[in-house]
Image (cartoon, rainbow, N blue to C red; front, side):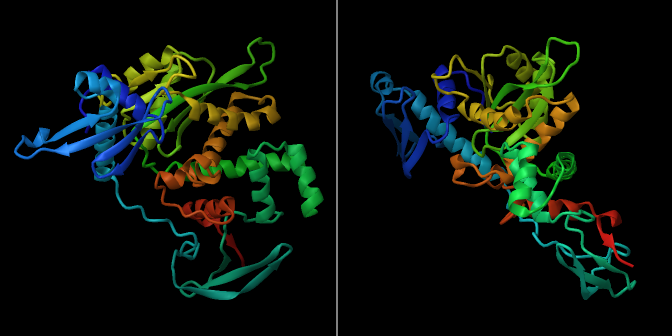
Length: 405
């Protein structure tokens, strides 16, 4: 666990570390640290000295002007030391992740027996479904992969979900399906699909704890809601993201931006990660200062975990959250406004699931944030269809399986 930080250079070192790809290890005892001014990099080296106290057995050197003048640890040395300590904490507390089976075990919906065998097939308009027979109770059934009693094919449903979160309006989705899939779907049907499956996936995703880093970012953006007879027609979406994995820990909707409003996403992020961060980077909103102290007092691993930004140019900045807000606006600019706060909350939950599990992220090598956070779900191919199947199987109830007499 990292001790409390009091030296201003230590806090600046933590600010350097909060930015991605600023500390790069080139050998066992040599690191390159990017300059905060953007003028190249500085070289930090570590030299082992025999016969010293075990806690001070290394000498540190840096090529920056501050170290050359003072011959004392600079912010670049502190950034390297903190990165070593954080890496040790992650290795100490991380456990091997076991991927959830994409094809879960098939059990009888009546007696829960695994003693089953294939029993012919059932032809439908959209293909052939495999039937199974239980050898213990003689019950026959078809496995529900999340699309039981749906008139349209799983491909059509998942294609609709994907287009919706990529910023296509419901009217244009219906037109797309009619042109390219020869499927006629009403706009209200599309809305029902979205609400149904986002509710299913949201409950399924809540059971996993993300293995995130120690630097978090938080920001808020507006969302428009119809309010008859009121001048104020917008509310706020609060997002909390991990800098290392890009995992969206919390996405909450509130009417105002006071201290209690700021505490809600921080509390949800703390529960989702099951840990406290070393630092939280925010914009200049005053509510963050008191909210962070209220939520993390006695839990944070440094004395002042709040890094408050002055402007967009000074590092560390909140650019990764600003980019996330852009992803949200791709969808909200099409919606224009939601009918109620409840609809806005459903949208926020759906966007969180889409961003973490479905959408690949260029900043982390084309992986999804859930993969970076070691969430034990193997989503390949049609990620929507795979995750819906796993979520339907996790319900473990007879109602989730289509019974055939």
